[in-house]
Image (cartoon, rainbow, N blue to C red; front, side):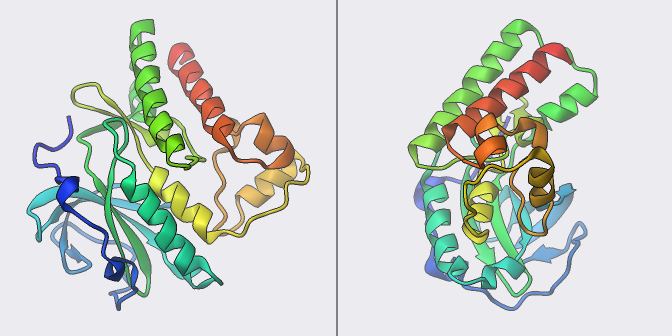
Length: 251
């Protein structure tokens, strides 16, 4: 179940200053008890990957537990990136659902872009499968329905997740599925250049997918539309959901 002191997003707003860079410490790793952005006290590290680092933190301004994801800010200086980022984050902020880890706010400094997200007290579907958890057909149907409802809300806002996978779907203590990292997908899409839709080979795709700063998804979750013409649309997420459900029923 989500933290009982979850932030009331109805009373929060994204201020323009939240997207203005300020001087930061430049630290790449924070230890428990240290502060991020002079406001968020680190409780523990939740995860670290190519997309960034996630911490469970206490927000000392509001007094609640949230998650902060830190992403390298170097790409922000690309031409037009700042204005696109501001616009896309505001869209992502407007998307609220029980089946999404909601985005509360963001901040940036000289070194990082920080996303302040709903903290979910639970584990990813990937972690459950790693622990050899067996999901019944009823479980899979229920999880699939919740993910589909979350995707519907995202798509209605004009957002494509781009990287739906087991690692990006959390189950809270009550068994509710929550899509995570969709805000990061929007952040990435606002920072990378648009690329032509010419047909590319899987080998070319893999090379492009691993180029610095150009994360486009996880290879075996990518749809045929992307593999052949590098087209992102709702089919991208629907195909990935199918892969997730297949993994849950066969692993």
